[in-house]
Length: 129
Image (tube, rainbow, N blue to C red):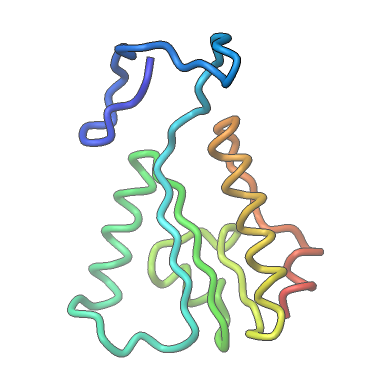
C-alpha cells in the first residue's frame, strides 16, 4: 500500500518497488513534513501569526510533522507562536547552521524511514548556537 498525496488515504500500489538487482524491496514510509527555515523576522507574509498557528495546528492534527529552524531569534518561542511544537523547533547561529541541518536530517530520516517523531536533543541544541 502507499499513500495518496492528495487525500492521505492508503491505496494499493500499482507496481512493486525493486532494487537495482530486481529484488522486491519494501518502500519507505511516506509522511508529510512542513519545514520552515528562517533567518529573522517575518516581513512579507500576507497572513497573521494567528492564521498561521491555526493552519499549522490543523496540519499537525492530520499527521504532518512540523519543524521550525530559526536563526537570530528564540526558535522555540517563535515556533510555538506559529503552531509548531517546541521540541521540533531549533535555534541556530548562522555560523553553526551545519549542525542544525544535520539535526534536521536526523529527524527527517527517522520520520520517513520508521514513522517515529524524533525531537532535537540537548546536544544538537547546544551545537547549533
